[in-house]
Image 1 (cartoon, rainbow, N blue to C red):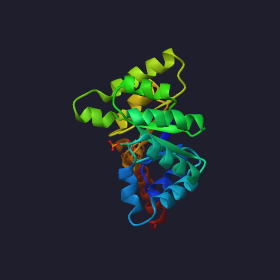
Image 2 (tube, rainbow, N blue to C red; image 1 turned 135 degrees about the vertical axis):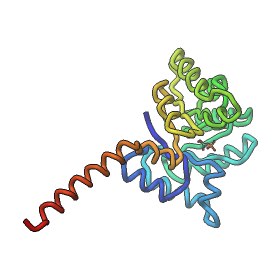
Image 3 (cartoon, helix red, strand yellow; image 1 turned 180 degrees about the vertical axis):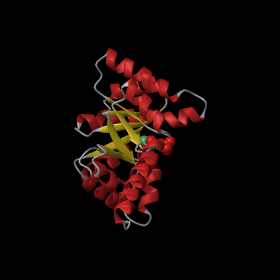
Length: 222
Ligand code: E4P
């Protein structure tokens, strides 16, 4: 399973890339607005693209097809690894098709049902992003969307990649991986949680205590 980091934080991306833990990055207007502050968001995206070799999703904010195409074209010029993120709307699907014809990869965002994923794939999306956590929060089983989309895409050999988004905890990652989502995009705090286990901490503490006792014994006068 590929991991993307769901953030525009250069510090977090840099750490995860150096550790070889991530295959790409996803941003959205909220994340980019938070990181960019007074900077030009395009400069921030350029920097992100230089930190990771894999795909970096950057989202359009226009709601009409022409606006999406204009913004998508500008975003795609930032770096070769930009993937243009397009919302799951009627105008968005036309933009996805046109960008695909021009050889520009897209990630259809804000998908909340498997049939939306199918529609996005038919339009020519490279990635579809079902939002698991946001569905769970309105008392729907977010993971069902991943499960259904996986079966549908496999039934028809659809190459569009399923990108599990809006991940809230490590169990989401495990379940998405078991179902066969192609990618999970993780907020930095969730990626860091994947490293943790209380027995790891307890074991390390014990190893160091035993070692320090031995050192103390060796130094003690006979
Ligand atoms: C995906 O690409 C989105 O940026 C993201 O996963 C949204 O998740 P949220 O529900 O935490 O905002």
